[in-house]
Length: 217
Image 1 (tube, rainbow, N blue to C red):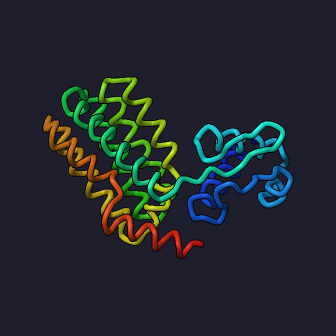
Image 2 (image 1 turned 45 degrees about the horizontal axis):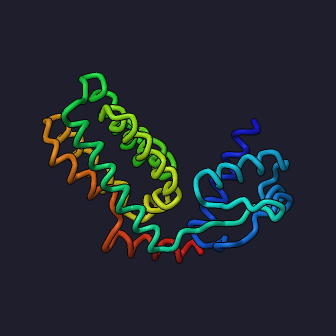
Image 3 (image 1 turned 90 degrees about the horizontal axis):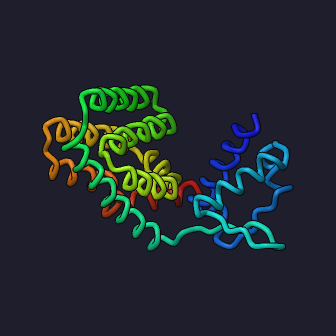
């Protein structure tokens, strides 16, 4: 029960940081957060530890926990690195994926399609994570997979928000199908390029995200 409540608090604070409702350097007070989310202080403490672990907060001894919100420049830099890591995972997966792993990849993408049918962006995000996890597993490089997961967790709030931009989920699903096709065909370079474009947030997509974040604020 506690971990479920902690996750709810974590996601709530995470989204408020992503949308600018909580500003960089703002103190995260346990008592006020417990009241805001209608929980005890224990799940709040757990949530704050998660935020520190994900890089969205800083714990200062004897002073407390403070928001560490990335600037837009930092966010773009992280997306640039993320796109390269995802591309490399897909390239290796195209060379190494097994029939069983390919079947799981297709099954998770079917879950993404179902999430779109239900109009549930948070469900799509969860199934989208499973989709990418299948590629990480299939790449056969545990170090690469772990580094990609670490950065994905750092960016998860912004990626979740990106999916709420109108039309982004169907576009994402179409990109998934193309990635699967390239991986299944063993087209490593194509899979790499498609995955990098799929993850990278730039141009019109970045402008759409900024507009969405301003609307939420």
